Image 1: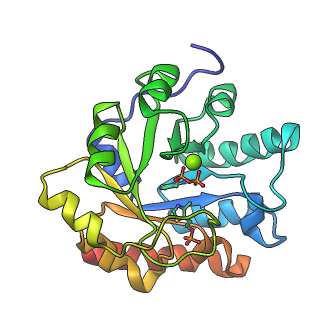
Image 2: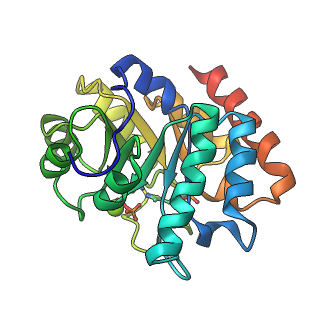
Length: 229
Ligand SMILES: Cc1ncc(COP(=O)(O)OP(=O)(O)O)c(N)n1
Ligand SMILES: Cc1ncsc1CCOP(=O)(O)O
Ligand SMILES: [Mg+2]
């Protein structure tokens, strides 16, 4: 295996718990605030998983991107929260991340699973039952389902689907851990979980509020999620 070693393999039952309150974050989402401070506040509030998604206008590149990934990962390690890299398998391997999240336009799930081995988490975005089944066959540990609601955080997002696909996948007997993403607020989190998600993945509802409100905002999400489980 290339790069730094990952930690112990995360058991499937633990994956559902890790997906409860999943922060997706990059510097372009932090509106001038220090991403490390935002992530530390979100960790203090109780986020269960963090994804480094350094993407979009003004995103860091090269060594600055690498250095930010390491700083955020260190903060997560101090709290025992797994750290996932979006899209970039090389970066994930280089920093010894706990996993990778890919979409349908990225490297295939089977190729990524082969590259990251069995001990790192693999998350795959799916928009249809067929994509969901294929991702699971190719080794996905969890699925990202969305956009559930309108989002301003992804320029090339697919059409909004509401909670329909989550319910459909569960009614088809697809039991893999799933997280909803896209326009999710604390007020909407319960509906997403009741539709079948194990948790919610969020960018702007956490990174787009004043830094002093991040911690209580995350706690508010967790309250709504626990009520809905
Ligand atoms: C948890 C989670 N779910 C879905 C996505 C979206 O991934 P993708 O479709 O590859 O789009 P980008 O995030 O790469 O723009 C995600 N990142 N995380
Ligand atoms: C990465 C991604 N994939 C589908 S929607 C989305 C953006 C989610 O961001 P927000 O929580 O701000 O709507
Ligand atoms: Mg992607």
